[in-house]
Amino acid sequence: MTRFVAPGVGEHDEIPAATPSERTTAAAVAGGLRSAGRPFRDAAAWSIGGLSFLVSALFLAVNLAYNQWNFIPPVDDAYIHLQYARQIGTGHFLQYNTGDPISTGASSLLYVLILGGAYALGVQGAAFLPFAMTFGALCLALTAAGTYRLGTRLVGRQVGIFAGLLVALSGPLAWGATSGMEIAFVAFLLVSLLLVFTSERAQSRFVWTPLVAVAAALTRTEALLFAGMLGLAMIWHVIAHARGTRAAWPRVIGRILWIGLPVYAAGAQYLYYWSATGSAEQNGVLAKSLLHMPAVYPLEVADKVLSNFRIFLDAFTGLSTQDYVFPGALLLAVAGVIGLFRRFPQWRGLALAAGLGVVLVLASVSTLEYSDIHHMRYVQPLMPILLLFGVIGIHSAAQLFTGGARRSVLVGGVVVALLFTVSQLPAWSLRQAQQAAGIRDQQVTISHWIKGHLPRGASVAVNDVGAIAYFSDRYVVDLIGLATTGFATPNLQVPAASTRNCGTCRSSGDRTTSSSSTRGACTASGRAACSAAS
Image (cartoon, rainbow, N blue to C red; front, side, top):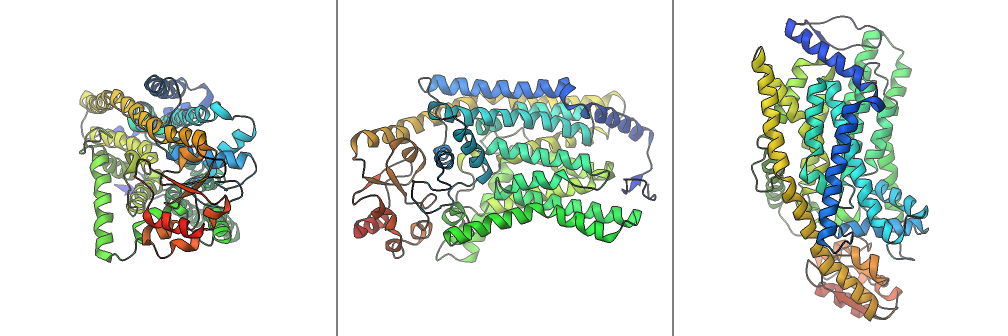
């Protein structure tokens, strides 16, 4: 039975009357909190983080062995980030080609700013891509350690260890961390966001949590949505605390306004995009969103969105052929959210925010035409949260038993999950190496051919714009519209609007060459538009 008590100093939550088993759990949580308060002396955190980094290093070793000991990412988009970062590092902010108008093809602004800063500090040439991959591996190691600490703080040390191990040994996460993309960085920010929230919740003074949310919001739009849901939980805690302690309302309003920092930051970013490019939306959204497709019926869009959403549900439930997670992971995660909400009243706001935040992100990404591209890389950062709540779900199921059976259910369930997870590591490492070999044999090879055979004044029109821009040292036109502002709409609506965007083709000379890539040759409308302009 639940009773309510007046809030004490710094506390305002609903407090249930504890049973003997709950007092045992509370003691375990208290012990976990004591260990969680010593982040740099926690051997488990170091061990889990070190294991994660070792797995990433093994992925890189397999990749290198498969590609004549050259660092090659498994996706061409990694080179888009590197190109933008190199331009930032040399003083050409968001110019994909030097002298271009600003473009918003870098879907992760903060990530390319970090890489650009590293480039400006001297991490250049052959060291630049290895730096990006190693940075991703480090972020995943911190994410695994952070997941352990978060699980320890929410439920107990045993749950934290199991969740951290699942993250450290995850094949999809290791793939993403060593891809050169921002995947592991976003995952690190999301876990850090929840971890800082748990540190500040007791006092209901959220000072650092909104700042971490700002970093997340400037890294991916999906992270902004998740941070927004957690922001609502923060506001709820602040108001509940104010009512219980009769706090001054001007101070409460100030705290609520501070919680809105990520919204202000995102608004400033989109305002800058609008003033610089004429559109507040990123080029990636304009080029890929189903909502921007011309001449489609609303029911067709809804059908495709629901189909994409179902793909995510199948993958996260472990019912697809992608070997993404252990079977039943999503169902256990839902049970974990419910279990955390019911058994730990102080974390009810977090449980609701995390659960609804994940659903909101999945729904948002489902509006993209190719939402599951690159092993669902847009939603990979959610995996540590999914795995953590999956373990909490196993823990909640174990509470239905008594005595030694309770521990057997918990340990047995997690061991099965770990066995499924570890068994897929070789397949994921080989998959990444083979995909990198494909990038090497296509985009990278074409780039070197262009650099050696086309004149310096040539312009190259391509679909996959990453490696060719990064290696060829030629002016590149992106027919998809990610890196060349104004081409996303013509790519979708061919060919009427194409001729309005051909200044780019003229700006670097009178010769335009089309290059085929993994998605085929450049579109006829793009060639016609550039030909008419020259």
